[in-house]
Image (cartoon, rainbow, N blue to C red; front, top):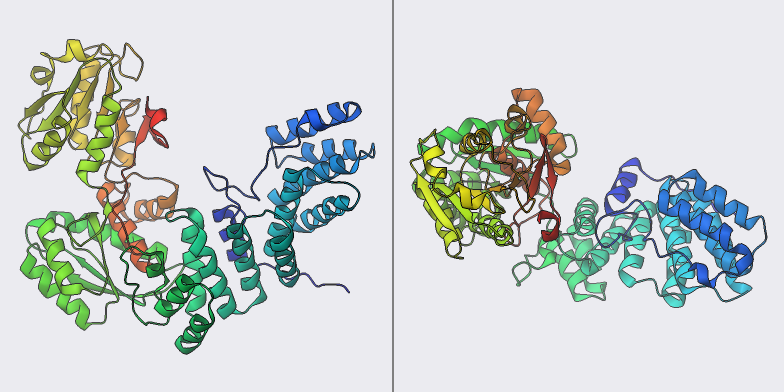
Length: 559
């Protein structure tokens, strides 16, 4: 009986790219295909076929999506190798086909490879890889009904992890066109994936979109039938029956996407200096987000005091806001939390008390810089302005011991007197830590370079670290290669996830967004999609290369 091919939606294809081919993500980053297993060891291959198999392995290592993978595999297959090796060559072809979106071929070659199991026992990694590739291709671009049948067979016959099978099933269920069953599928997948991963974010987004098309009474019926208590809770949350009792539980993400987003940012008072930047960021952010999903945006002036914030928050509640972005300021955040609870608020700043913000705490960022500084053999010289910010940052750094701390008036423009007494000891394998805004970072770095100091992370160089307040792409471009080699722990750094916003902001404002604008974008985007903060934001660490920022993924990379 023939089966018709069901077209995959373009948006769904994009989603699969994000999560790395269903749930099959590599341990360190998403990839465009099923999880790659180590190829069949050459030592297990008959001698007469080893050179041909080595050619396949080399082609995969050079470019797993390259045409040479298929060419090398075909040369090997033309020699009619034993079934285990034939299956391995077919797996290489199938994986390559999946990577280039040729799902029909990936399905066919995976099936041919699995058929070889009827002739001889296959290598466990090869057989598992064939199942994974078959499931991935069927779920993404084949017949979704056949995909679900294959998933059930794999559940009984293979070692493919349950989390991977659930991810594939969720994709296939969505492509079948039943939003209620697909919503259950994505909730079941989300239950097993790790918090904070690309898979978790994708599962949450798809669940929210699908659940929005299902009546609350039907969601409750699905919850009553769910085998997993967590999935049942998720479905009830989506039906509007309240949030989970445990704060931070992933099921809080199952609440329906908000249709009214309140923005509570200052337009008057002492914080009004932030108003233009924040308004520009919100305007650009709305322009980007509205392309994907429409919501009603409700604006209120937060003012700059707890009293004005309370009044603004009450007005937002009266206008039906379901989630709120803002305000800023520690006392103001506390006031907003008191008024808004249980309506969630996402703050474009640090977490305060019961309010969780999108910015990492200054202390967390300082700790990251201090850990890097502790690896240096020379003196650590800490420079900070003599104001509230500088005192807070410097005190945190000094608490770890082993550093010389120098403060200066906030209006300082010449730093030679601040540097000269300690620089000789610091520049021999030590570091300078600048806990200040980018204009002062620029002045200090220029002073260091004018003194002939070689900056870098080499054993005889001076490493410069900074909290880089006010960081933006424009600051780096203005300095040309001035900041090359610096390691920064900013409040927010531009990157691939914010590129659409950065482009729109530049189009509207003629300049790049700074860290504060990026924080507004992050808060607004989370509110737009109901992605509530459940824990404090982690600090980011970036290295400047020329005028570009390169994320530092592990502590070893910052050595």
